[in-house]
Image (cartoon, rainbow, N blue to C red; front, side, top):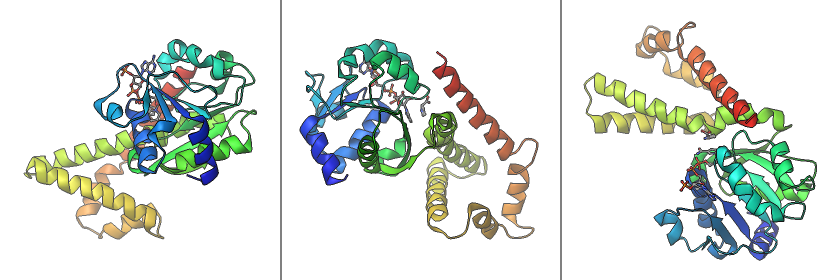
Length: 274
Ligand SMILES: NC(=O)C1=CN([C@@H]2O[C@H](COP(=O)(O)OP(=O)(O)OC[C@H]3O[C@@H](n4cnc5c(N)ncnc54)[C@H](OP(=O)(O)O)[C@@H]3O)[C@@H](O)[C@H]2O)C=CC1
Ligand SMILES: O=C(O)[C@@H]1CCC=N1
């Protein structure tokens, strides 16, 4: 994190509303990157053992003017939880939300129309600083606010700035939910290995290392994923036999994943419409 952003967070405080799977993943990353636990206030009714052990200010009186309030409760909890923090609205506290499908307009209505708001869509590899987060802000979110949010989120992985909020449903469906698709790929590849006679442990080790290695290669190689796929595929060989199934136009992977991503994007839109 840049020294300026870190200093401001340390001086004014970071409030984390909701510290479940996503809040914990990010907090774990920030603490590992050197954000002092004393600069963090967490509101969460049932803190995990891990959270209690971190030394953050847990369910305590909040600072007067935190630099950032990070909203990481479920979209369905917003109406119950946000009013308690509305006093920080219309001021110089930046509201940074990671909630899927909760629009900037919704925050504006609940916090006041002079509130700087940034929507962010992170993902859980943030816990090991390998996340990717997309951000976009309202017209009150200044360059300094965006820089501070980016500095905070860069500590847990890559950050991309969106052209506008209209891209958020698609982003949520690709990278926000995406780790779950990849974990399911690992599960199903391992299960398929078991069907071929491998032990559960060996099949899982092979599947996990293959997905991790292929992901790292895709990131580091000069070749694009299509070329990397072809590099594995010998004419008339084993990979070609598998890809004939997976790349089947009608019921193969592309059709399936297109449907899955569309379902996630549609759900994101539904959440936004209440
Ligand atoms: N998980 C993911 O991969 C991603 C999630 N997100 C977004 O992050 C947000 C959180 O999701 P996720 O972490 O998965 O969900 P979780 O349910 O794991 O986390 C939500 C947390 O909020 C707590 N909470 C409930 N009520 C309150 C309250 N009144 N005040 C403060 N905290 C409260 C919950 O406590 P309790 O469990 O005790 O009710 C829980 O610890 C969602 O909006 C989601 O859209 C975004 C990107 C990725
Ligand atoms: O499933 C969800 O709604 C959240 C948003 C993206 C990942 N998890």
